[in-house]
Structures are given as structure tokens and as C-alpha cells.
Image (tube, rainbow over the protein chains, first blue to last red):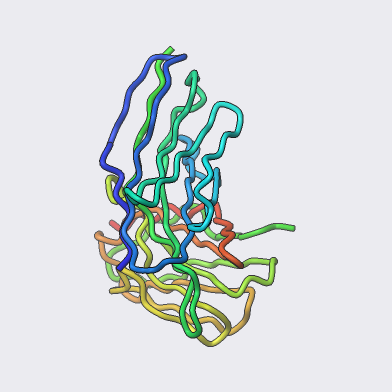
Length: 118
Length: 110
């Protein structure tokens, strides 16, 4: 069965600090997709990244970077030089590849609430 | 394109009442799903559908009913609301592992 664990329930940092949000996943499948979503105080879910299990390259997008390591089943998310606008709940999610008769179910972790203080 | 449209945005129900949360997408996605979000629990899958006429249960299906008569619509029915169903509900549609979420419905059962 699929499972996503975000062990950090809440993190509080001061603006300009770097912060890493951890995500560990479990799956029996060799083909799967990993995601990060941001949920700001307004409540909507904002897509940040999708990573295919065959692509272990790290990715950087501005102040955001992601470290995917299949050996440890982790997909961690780092925000460099955090800003107050980064304050949100961040969710890691996993979707196993669709098989015949299967589905693209998306399974979420419980989320990490990040507070960036000025 | 509107994407995924959920209605209503807010709803208060009395225990035992029934209601339907509406979800519509205009992207011709095969996959649609309903999640509930509770504090500290993340988003949990209630029901999902891989196409018109095909639905299946997720992690927390009890108390909820779904049907998928068209590609566009995936309503979620609460037959007899309970206070435990107080939550924020999100509908999502997807294709090829790209997902679009609705803006959510905040439901309170008193």
C-alpha cells in the first residue's frame, strides 16, 4: 500500500533562513510519481512539482529545490532564504502508475505547517 | 477554462440532513476524486472515479456516496450528515498524473 510520511508537523523559522521539509514514502511499485503542494492560509492547493520515479535529478526553481533519493525513499523540499509569503502548509503526495483497471490515486502526507517570522 | 468547479463554497447542515456537493471539470479528465481535509490528518481520499460509470472507494468512504454519469461531473452525496463529517472537501480531476483541485467546500454539521 502507498504511504507518505511527513514527520515534521510544524516548523517555525525566521525570515531568510533556509528550511527543509522532509517527505518519506512507501510504495511497492517501481513506477510512481511524487508531488509537493502548497496550501496558503487562503486554503487553495497550489501545485509545486511532480517528479517521476525514473528521474532522480534534483530540481531547482528559484528559491525552491527538491532532493529525490530512491535509496532512502525520500523526496525532500528545501526553501532557501525563506520569506513570510512562504508561510503555508506543505503537502507531499504519491501516485502509483496506473495499471489496466487501476487508477491514478493520489495519496497525501499529513502536511507540514511552515511559519516564517519576520 | 474554468478547471474544477466546486459548489457550494460553504455549507452548514443539521445532523441527519442530506446534501450533495457538486464538482465539475471542463478538461475532459478521466480521473476524478474527492478528498476531505481535517486538522492534522492531511487530505484523505473518500471516493474516486477513473471514468464515466466507474467509481471506487478510497480511504474514508463511509457515509458518502458518489456516481459518475458523465465525464464532467462527480457529485458527492451525504445521505445523513453527522458532526464527524464536518470538514473541508476538495474535488480533484486528473489526467496523466497531472491533477487540478477545486477551491474546496467548507462543510459544518451541527
